[in-house]
Image 1: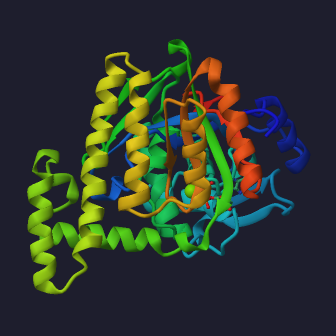
Image 2 (image 1 turned 45 degrees about the vertical axis):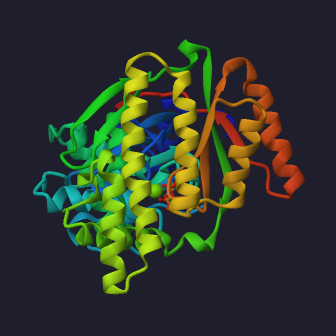
Length: 398
Ligand code: ADP
Ligand code: MG
């Protein structure tokens, strides 16, 4: 990644080369990392993501003839040409399914004024690294069409339409966190999102102003083990909620956790379920919801460095209770802490992807070097490490 954002003018120029005319405008939407609150979204709990400086940038022109043309400078593929009135899931697996899915979701929601577009994309969000390049692509498309067709939809609604595109058109089951972060984040803040009622609040988070840095470490690995794991954890949480007679694990209060675990273990044994596994899942979800609350309190109090140990505690919970870490993620955390980081945890779905490391700014270089050396010694591919500066959500840039 040479730079974290592509200049709008370059993307507009790319549009001219592909389509032979000028775009109506250029929009940008960022990738995100989640600071804390993992596997809590589908339990109707809390998450705390922030937007990265890395963005998907799209130059777009409105069309009124039913034609949708899509091009990404980041693939070698030619322009995809579709008809908006013939869009239907399932998508064919190509990248164009994401923006096409957004057009489909908008029209399915009654916004039939969306009658076509030409789109040219360039993105600096690493793909498949758990940093939500897919949400960036959906949100930039939704925002551009919202502006070009005067739909007047608020940012959280654009996020929900992006999620709908990913769930129902592309066919990927994801919560609404990624798209909401990409659409709604504000620079210098993390986004406290309640996944039950989707209320959100901007929480001050500006590590640099406190002499700190938040490093993002993309391990560049993705283990096949992760393929069925999300669905398995999700099913386990839903089963545990039923056994505890709550609608979602969000409804188990942190102070009631010991009692809830006793009741769950007894109920699981009665029904022949694996009580150890279900108890671990519940302990992770309830304690991670609590950790989100603690981090938000600390950030509100300006005690940014003090969130470090809470992040590390979150990693242990994901590693030992949810069992979704992997050797590379564990190595980021252990080597960063050994080099003096204040806290570190894996972020995202697990089994690879990225980790976040909180470190004093004057130790960031040493921590970076130590993590790189540890990877080299272990024979892992070199990780990609960059500062995760909390940045703005989606916006028009030209
Ligand atoms: P993540 O969202 O964690 O990066 P996903 O698998 O959800 O990983 O999304 C990655 C997919 O999004 C890519 O395989 C591709 O289809 C699409 N995508 C993301 N960025 C681009 C891009 N710049 N050009 C084309 N497709 C992209
Ligand atoms: Mg994604």
